[in-house]
Amino acid sequence: MSLLILYGSETGTAQDVGESLRREALMRNLTVRLISMDEYDLHSLPNEKAALLVCSTTGQGEMPPNMRSFWRSMLRKSIPNDFLTNTHAAVLGLGDSSYQKFNFAGKRLFRRLEQLGARMLTQLGLADDQHEIGIDGALIPWKEAVWMRLYEEKIFENMKLEVDPTTVIPSKFILEPASISENLNFHEEDQEYRLLTAEENRRVTADDHFQVRKLFIFTSISIYFQDTRLVRFSVDDKDSHFFSYNPGDVLMVWPYNNDESMQIAIDALQYSDDLLDRPVHIRTNDRYLNPPPKWLVGDPTTLRSCLRRLLDLQTIPRRTFFEVFASLAVDEFEKRRLLELASPQGLDDLLAYANRVRRTTAETFRDFPVTSKSISPERLFDLLKTIRPRAFSIASSPVVQGNSIELLVAKVQYKSRLSDPRRGLCSTFLSRLKPGDKVFSKIRPGTFKFPPVEVPLICIGPGTGVAPFRSLLISRERNASSCQSILYFGCRNSKSDDYFREEWEKCRRTKVVKAYSRDQEEKVFLTQWFFYCLQFSDLRATSNDRTTKCWGNTGMDFGEECFDFHSGFLRRHAQSSDWSDT
Ligand SMILES: Cc1cc2nc3c(=O)[nH]c(=O)nc-3n(C[C@H](O)[C@H](O)[C@H](O)COP(=O)(O)O)c2cc1C
Image 1 (tube, rainbow, N blue to C red):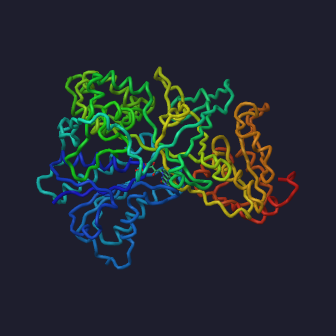
Image 2 (cartoon, protein in one colour):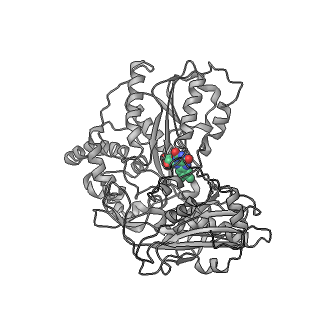
C-alpha cells in the first residue's frame, strides 16, 4: 500500500509541494503516488490508507482547474457520510492572505473530508504567500505533524520518522539522446498555450521617471526605476478564436529566464556548448510524473532550451531546493552550509541568505561552485521548479483593437543588498520584447464581473491597475447604449505616468477623475481622495478582493464598511450630466 499525494494547482506551486512531499516520503521508506486530483478516481479514495491533499485557491476563492471535477464528485449528495472512515487524510491549502477568500479551496476541502468521515491526520495547514518565508511558514509544521502522525499510527510498515538529509533519491528524469535535431520546433495546434507575436513595445513612462519606495516591509528593498510598457501582440488569424477575450479577462504569459541569469547558471554548472546544444528527449520513469509539455521545450529539446524556457533560474530558492542540493553536495564545506540552510533550525539563516535579499537560484548555483559543477543535467529537473505563467489584465478592447492584445506592464526592478539589480522575471521578459518575438500565452477569464453597458460604473484603477478598466471603458465608448462611467485614476504626476491621457480626453461616456500624488506640495493619493468623497456620500461598494487591503493603506479606517457600486447614489451621479459635485 502506498501513500497517496493529490494536488490541485493553477500555477504549479501545489504540484511542487506535492513533489517535495513525495521526495520526503521516499526518504522515509514509503512508496508514493503523486497525482493531480482530476486524474484520480474518487471511488478509490476509501481504499487508500492515507492521502495528503495539497490545493491552492484561485480566482476569487475558487478551486484550481485541475481539481474541479474531483471536487464536483466530492460534493455529490449520493456519497454516504461514512465514505472515508477507513482513510487517513491531511489537507494543506495554499493561498494568499491579501485575498479576502483566503485559502477557501483548502478550507472547503478539509471540511468536506471531515463530513465524509475521513480520519484527519492533523489540522488544516494554511500556507500564505504573505508569510515572511512564504508557504514554508505553514508547510514545515504541517508536514512535521503529518509524518509524526503517520509514524505513530503505524499506518505504513517500515516507515522511518527521522531521515538522513544526505540520502540521495534517484532522479525522476532521464535525458535520452535524440537523433533528429531538425525537429526542434514547437507544436502549436491543440496546445494549451499558443504563440502571440509582439508587434510593439512602447515605453509609456517618461525616460527620467524614477521612483524610490519600500517594496517589502521586512527588507530595505526599494524600486528605483519605473519603466512601464504598453506591449502590443498581434494574433494570428488561425488563432483568433483561441485568443478571443472580453474586458476584464487576463492574458497568461509564459516568460523565459533572462540572459543574465542563464549565463550565471551556465557558468556555475560549467556545461559545455556541446552538452547544452545536444538534442535530447526528456523522459520519466514514474508513470505519475509528467515530463514537461512538448510544446514548451520542443520535442526533442536541448538543455539550453530548457534552461531558457522551462527551468526557473530566477526564483528565490526554497528550503526544498537546499534539501536536494545538499544531498548532491560533494564538497564537505559546501555540504555543511547547504544542510544548515535546508534544516528546520536554519530558517532564519535561509531568510537572511535567500528571501531578504531576493537571491535567485542561478546566484545560489554561483555561491556553491563545487556542488554546482557536479550536478548532472537530469538532476536539474529534480532541483529546479519549472517557470510558471504569469497573469496580466488585458488593457486593450476586443472591439477597438481587433486582432491585437495589449498589456500595460510595469517593469519590476529594484535594489537589495546584493550588487546586481533584482528583476521581475515576467515583467523584464515582456519589457525586453522586440517586434517579431513570440510569446506563449492563453486567455483566462478574469474575476471582474462587469455589469451590462446600461449600468453606470465607478472604476478605481491607479497606476497599471487601470488596465482592465481601459479595456472596458473604451469598449463602452463604442456602444451607443452605454451609460456614463467614472474612472478614478491615480499616478505620480501628469507628465510622467499619466497613462492613456490622450485617450481619456476623447472619451464621451467616461468621466476621468485624476489624482496626481506629486504634482503639488502635499501628497494626494487616489484612494485617500476617493474615500474622502465617499465620506460625504451615501455610496456603498462591495470590495471582494485585495482592494480592501489597498484601501486600508490610505490610513483611513473604514472597518467593516461595505460599499455597493450599484447604489442609488451612483446611479444619480453617473447619469447626471453635471459631474462637478462628484
Ligand atoms: C489569479 C489568482 C487568484 C488567486 N486567488 C486567491 C484567493 O482567492 N484566495 C487565496 O487565498 N489565494 C489566492 N491566490 C493565491 C494562490 O492561491 C497562491 O499564490 C498559491 O500559492 C498558488 O498555488 P498554485 O501555483 O498551485 O496555483 C490567487 C493567486 C492568483 C494568481
